Length: 185
Image 1 (cartoon, rainbow, N blue to C red):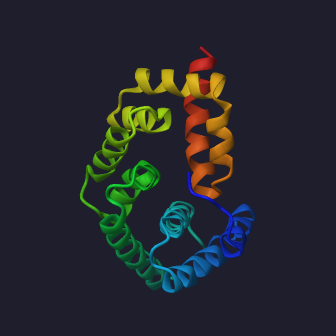
Image 2: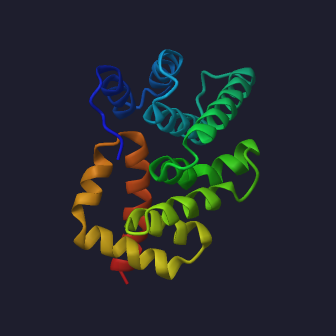
Image 3: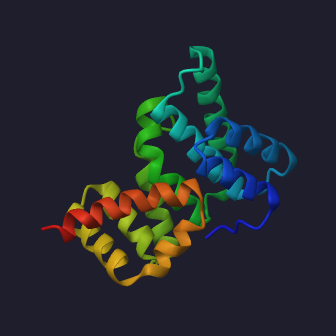
């Protein structure tokens, strides 16, 4: 998983934990301009945009939303070109692209599954990648079985996700939701 050891990333994590997504996004933008080679910054930026688009912000105009969508497209294009063979990047970004594909219409439909499939093929031992691939494919019995296995027996995975801020929290929520459905049956 990505490390969270820089002071600015810690500030981003603090903003995220407070639900101050716009402030976190502004800091992410500064980080991208100062260091375009940090995949963690792109992952966080894309997750922040996802949450802002999903939840909305009453203080944003239609022009603000349009600018946000363009920012997402630019960040996705650059980061995908840079990290298309990095399993961690492919997993984190690919896992939530379904929503962004639908909402923004970009990238083309099916990219999320291709990204998570590639992450899984790059690291076949990673249960999170396998779970996400099965989930996005709609193979719910298989994905739910893996979710249950992760939650019941692999707490180190949940602990590592907890260190990832908003991206890890987003993945954990989906994972725990799927596992709880299985465990409650």
